[in-house]
Every structure is written in structure tokens, then in C-alpha cells.
Amino acid sequence: MPVTIVLGGQWGDEGKGKITDALAASADVVVRPNGSTNAGHTVVTDDGVFKLHVIPSGILYPHCTCVIGAGVAVSPPDLLREIATLRERHARLGQLYLSDRAHVIMPYHPLLDAYEEARRGSAGIGTTLRGNGPAFTDKVARRGIRIADLLPGAEAVLRRKLEILLPEKNTLFVHLYGREPVDLDELLHEAQRWGEQLAPYVIAAEVFVQDAVAAGKHVIVEAAQGTMLDLDYGTYPYVTSSPPTAAGACQGAGIAPTQVDRVIGVFKAYTTRVGAGPFPTELHDDTGQLLRERGREYGTTTGRPRRVGWFDAVAARYTARLNGMTEAALTKLDMLDPLPEIRICTGYRLGDQLLSAPPARIDLYEAVEPVYETLPGWRADTSSATSFADLPVEARRYVERIEELIGVPITMIGIGPARRQIVWRHAEALA
Ligand code: IMP
Image 1 (tube, rainbow, N blue to C red):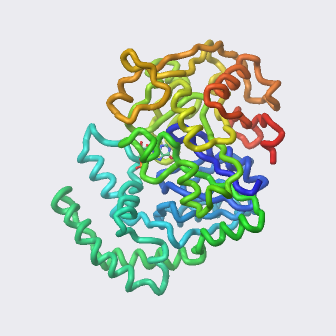
Image 2 (image 1 turned 90 degrees about the horizontal axis):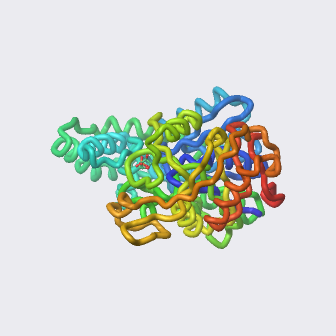
Image 3 (image 1 turned 60 degrees about the vertical axis):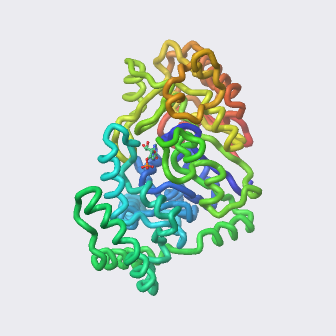
């Protein structure tokens, strides 16, 4: 089983860090294929809680080599800080590499993100304000700065690129947003300093990953965000700017679709989303508040309260199929422990139509009414279960019903933040 993709089946924050960490115990290489500092993956070990942004969740195992792939946008000061914090707190880390093709989040990108969100006012996307969208916009517009451009020896190339780029950014800063322009020489100086500090980590990541696959190494690709935030298939325009799908994971990691053995979709046992956009099963009542507090549903990167709702099997089945999920992980099941009954959305009603997949038009998606199925709760503590049979019958029924609705076997069930709090459901999932 050399290549496994771990990805989000909802709107992000599904618990991909925990699942990747569990699988990484037997992995050689963990690759991050997409996203940027906008992502936040949480891993809990005996040494405490680790919040990772661009560094893959395998880093806490000394035997794992972690690779930040070409599809990631990297903010050098944030990455250097993330490395320093990890080093301070954890003595034995895995090896870290960074793709020379990854794009750079330059200091003007978070500014553009913030100014543009402010300009949109109530029509804002609710981005993480980390400069993710503007950095990927520059990438697609073919004017982005890449890690290779920061390295010693590339000074002239970087200067030429910035001489073309900065007048455009400064025109926006001064004339559209009424702000100060960015100084070219200061920026060049800063960028070269980052290049010197990052140089020891920089490699041709796709070549490294291909060599690992060819050598039969166990490679995990840990995607960021969730499929419902994908540019094509998510709730556009309330989406992120790099693909959180299995196809995107292949592209960003430098792996071919034919090399992938397992695609594990991670779903929370209920649904959350941060930022604006449609959310048919959103709860505005006491149950929503209870789940937010029990589940500590506050953004890892921004601290924003997450919106909370019932499990949406329409969106989940859609993402399961789009990603060709071979199995699924269901996290935070224990958060539902106190509820007397639990709902699952099995369809969207739109006027007299029953939709079985998300509509493309955002105004229609905002207007759908969820059709619910209600299951009995279990009102018991599941957090110390060690096998599927240990779970209350109602909890097992809930897991099995989701499995039927999304059409994918659920092989891992998260019942708490600690490493040991995973119920492994099928022997093959232990591979
Ligand atoms: P951006 O990726 O910062 O541009 O934000 C675009 C949308 O994606 C916003 O709704 C964000 O809240 C959401 N988003 C981005 N990264 C994450 C994540 O790691 N988890 C959950 N939502 C995210």
C-alpha cells in the first residue's frame, strides 16, 4: 500500500491532522500538496497539542520525512516560525523538505487579502486573511514568486520579477485601497534573507516523492481544507484557492493518479464551516452551541467560532464520489454523546424538487431546505471505546447509516483528541 491520500470531505477542519498522525506511525513520507498558512491541522501527542499549518502532520515522528509540495503557497516567515516553535517543543522531529516550485506568499498578499475583504464588506468570503487567495491568483496569472526565486544566486531573477509586479500591486494599494506603496529594495532584501534561511530545506520535491514511490515507501499525501471548499466543486465563490481534492492532492504532491492505492475521506460526525457561504444543516439553537463548546469549534488558524450543523450526507456523498474515496474516517463521534436524538440530512428540497447533489447556483444552494432523518442518540460516554463492538448500539447504527448514505466504508472512528482515541474498524485499515 505505498500511496494513501488523506483529504477533507466537508468544509475543512474534519480532523485530517489526527488521522494523518495515526497513519504516519507506519509511513515513510508525508506530503502536503495544497493550501498555505490558511490551514490548521491539530495533532495531540503525549507531549501536548501541536497546531500545524504548512508542515505535514508526520513531522512529530522522527522516522517520517515531511515534504511541502509544489501545490502549497508558503509564507517564509510563517514557515520559519512554525519550524522554530516545533524545534523548541519537540526534541526528535522528522526531516523536512520544501519544494523549489512552491509559490511564495509575499508580504503584499495578506495585505491584499485584508483590503479586498474590507472592500467587499458584507459580501466578503470570510477568508483566513493569510494571503492565500492573492498568492494563488498570482500563480494562475503566471506572475507568482516561487521558492526557487528566493534562493542565493537568483537575485537578478527576483529583482526583474518584482520590478514588473510591484508597480501593479502599488497601483492597487495607493489608488484602489488608499494605502502606502511597498518598497522594492526593502522587499528584495527581506526575500533574500528568507531564501538563505530556507535553502537547507529546498529540494525538487516531486523527484524525491517519485523516488520514494518507486522504492515502495509508504507515502501519505495530507491534503488541506475540504472538498466543499474546492474552486470547481465547492460553494463557489465561498471557497479556497487551491484544490483540496484527490486530483489536487496528486497534482500538488507530484504523484500520478495511477500510483494511488487508498483515498481516505475524513468527515466530522457533524458538520462545521468557517467563513461565509451556504450551510443547509446549520444549527442556530442550543444544540449548535453545545456542539461548538464541546467540540471546541474555534478556528485553529484564526480563532474564529465555527458554524456548526448536522451531518450533511448530500454533500458527503458528493465529495465521496468526486474523490473516489476508498474509505472514510469519522471524527469527533464522542461530541454527540449527550444528544437525545441526532439528525442526518439525506436530501435537499428546493421548491417541489428533491436534489441529491449540491446545485451550482449559490442562491439556490442558500435556498435549499434539508430533508432529515432522525436517529436515536446513545447518551453514553464513547471516549474510551477500544473496538466498534464497544460502542453503544445507537452509535454503531449512526456510523453504519452514514456509511450507507455516502457509499464508503468507515474504517476509523475518532472518539477523542488523543492518539489512542481511534476505533479501527477493519483489520486492513491498520496496514
Ligand atoms: P482562504 O483559503 O483564506 O482564502 O479562505 C477561503 C475560505 O476557505 C474561507 O471560508 C475560509 O474560512 C476557508 N478555509 C480556508 N482554510 C481553511 C481550513 O483550513 N479549514 C477550514 N476552512 C478553511
